[in-house]
Image (cartoon, rainbow, N blue to C red; front, side):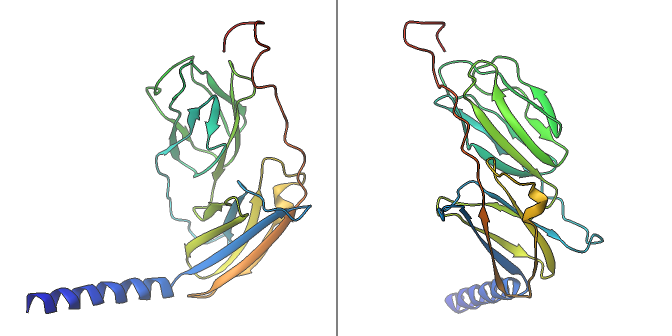
Length: 221
């Protein structure tokens, strides 16, 4: 009898989960460059087209690491209000900063984990740098909408558990050559639907900064 109730309870949970998925929608995005190659680290954001829709607040703690004198991940996407910690896992000290209008801050030269995270209160792109290592460049995309995803190495990303409605979907990438607003597309998704959207982005070459000083010259990094 006990096993019977367990099976019945499991079946009920599965049915509830299936019903919940049927009431939401999904947008599958694909991003390629001008040469047809998949684009990784493109941020895809869906904003309800109805400006009166109240967006759920979904800030959460997040991390941008420093490993091998690089920001990891190089591109991070967070919701407005998210607190981000910048641990330093290198054997040298870093001094992380940003002069971006969306968030200006500076963490004094440190090793380990800073005492306090940085809270990103305004939407926009925040460019990260290190005052000690000029080649260290990272990006935090602060999204006003909680519905976002970042493309993988195959250029694909999925925005899941979307309330069914019309969305304005757009994409951003550090090397994009046009204004983000010009990538906007309107997608209307119904319950249980998997809508598809694709972009071909014209990307500029990635800026290359010499990673380390010439051996025997200058100070140690």
